[in-house]
Image 1: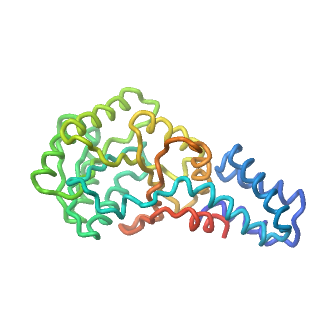
Image 2: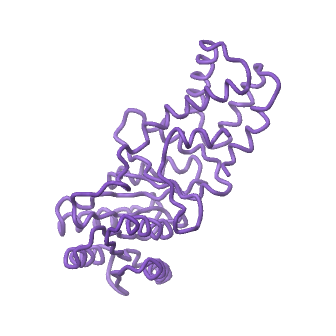
Image 3: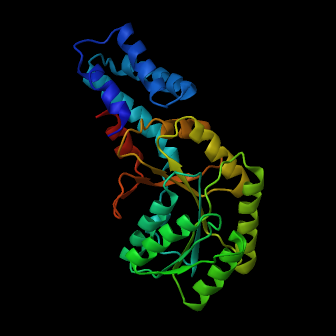
Length: 295
């Protein structure tokens, strides 16, 4: 459950709306990771719509707020969604990046299952060469999904990516998903390593990687904005998957992302992770997400 729902539950059930009601709403949005600039924009939009529609009841204002958030988030919605497109590339290469603990490896397992459900042949590559535990975890997902895994006990991530490209071509795989080690965006040497991995992939298969995906922890809050900015500047992200939205995540960071990248070239949100199960990967829909935030 989104934390924002808990915060606003009583607010939308109150008997009247006055200036104190609007102040409480504004404070709740800020505390729920929506961020100050985004909150100010939403409150301005809500007040204008309420005046125009002569809306005064909590229920009517709730509907107007859902519409305002949906309009904001629509700029992040991938249409068509690459997760449901049969790519002309074979293999289609997905490079997956993120910080430690964001749920990257679990997300790759879900992606693998998703592509297999489309009857697409998948190959995984263990590009986290720092931690044996990471390779073992990815190996478990490969076994669980019944797919092959390219890995090395020595060498670097770029070498794994190079081998995986040639393996995917030889095996006529439809999709190659390349994992990478978790890293902070402030670790310059590790960010440079990611750039090298991207260059090696492009050299081994011109035009690849076709998707560069950042896995973002939904609990991260406003720090998630700086993560997206840094990885996007380094790699040119094409998409995001926001994870851990089944627990205590407040959910507002997605609104802040939409505001931050307003009018700019930006990564789109492909899906949301709402559980640990292999099928708990939900395509991002702006209207549905907005409704869930406030209901």
